[in-house]
Image (tube, rainbow, N blue to C red):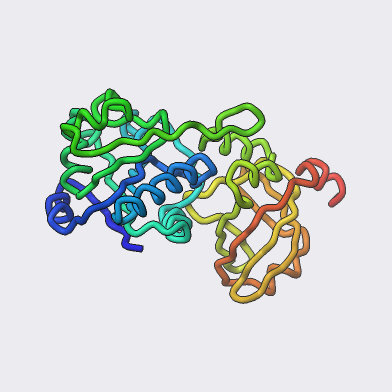
Length: 275
């Protein structure tokens, strides 16, 4: 999969290099089941039209830029992890557009022309609530018209769990509330993060969220080895530690992958037992 970072300076160069594609549009944080439905539909359309399957996302988060950094967004995964998941889904190109105030102020038809039509898009696919252009005035109901009907538009309905829409926001809430076992239903896979282990300290990599305080059953991957383990989380201090201290010696100086299975106790209970 080709990863392409796009900004005002290199847009025209990528337009010249583009080829016929079906473009899935969205922020895709977490690549949850709702996002997967969008990409699956884009893949079906790409095969139908004998075109490449491309994905366009944005970074940093629009809320952060528009609020001048006043609104904090907890990301579910870094861009490299998002790219890894998209590649497994068969995506050919992953466009990452630098989100700026200038980009946000584009008229809807300008965005469609510059970032879709001139990049070779023949069909755009997005969720029912995707918006684009100045103040989000553009939407999937008008995208075809904004392109002069040179691009088709497919709007994908929401995916629900227990009667509620699956969204990045609801997944963030589940993580912060420690409802880890529920995440498989929302993400279509277990929640996983990466962390660094250096000189006895364990710290989560950037752009991952730490769950609520508590003790969790996890699977650790370090190099070619896997360990079933328990870790405890102190969210206020942004601290994670193993309940078995000896495990730290085995994986010191590794970057590890943590697959979160379920929360088994509160952090307060762990402190009481430890005392």
